[in-house]
Image (cartoon, rainbow, N blue to C red):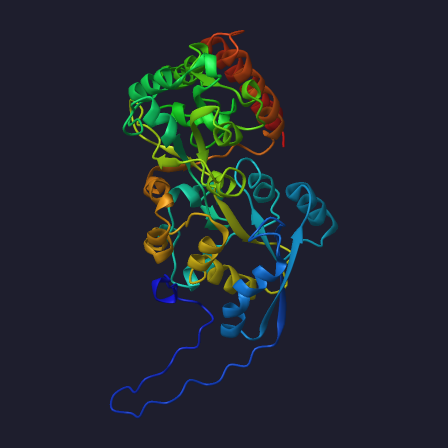
Length: 423
């Protein structure tokens, strides 16, 4: 697969000096580097819990940079909580993973990680070599603080057996078809519902996007749920439940919508590529397909969930750390995404043989250009995990109208912003 790799110009590569003006070519002087060790941190779940798999992935890097030794130190438990503690203690890894949602902004805002613009410039590289939906998550005031290593996007998973039984030949392509198919596929007597979607903003937010709305303004300093577009998207999502065509996981004895789909209680679900591995492992007999999210009234945007590599401010060898990040997100990215069942952050890597050989990923790969990073501002963890989800449940369960729920979210969200303004 090496011939499919995308290449970046690495700042630390020796340049070969050619003959000029008829002079004989001379060899570049040998550059002797002092051996350094770079610690690499991240949660224990990647590439899997097999630490040796990470070192196998890093072998080509250490062959190219024999003076750089990489020490992998995965974190078990709540990664972000442990990482915050490590920064306070001054013993965080040299290179750390920053997650999506609201998990990157605290470390960027606190100055725990270095801006990488100067390294990009020295390497003759650019953030434009990546999907904009991935770099936007790690950009603050014009500076890029992490290089996106991989991502995932939401797609529509559909049960081919239930579709055939209902006489539906293909997955829905727009909101009208999605609602119509969900109605046909719902069989209350059999306890089967047309669609299952987790009642959380990470899942209903894409309906707001597709209606032309947004959760926060571009600078993530103000709530934007008091718009007609936001209400149109949220109301569509809520009405799937209110009409009895959608089911919460708890209604069908599941803990998440992927499980609802795997046990055959919902005919469709909106999930990311992570469900592919779960289906293969836990529900291998299910016959399913994946499609891009049905198009909304304005666009067919979807959420992206990027993860990036960043350099800690305490790193004593930032150039070596950059060389490692540059490799992992450049030449090494094809091997990374193939080994971790993730999607690339570079458009050039979407053409590697792996995705040709694993066509199940094709609809998700094709959605990458319209994917928007799922995130929320620093300090909004509590708001996202409580108020956002609680208001969603009240609307889904009929205790509040969609308009009431959004008004409450707009008001409480603005209050959360005000409480953070003094930081």
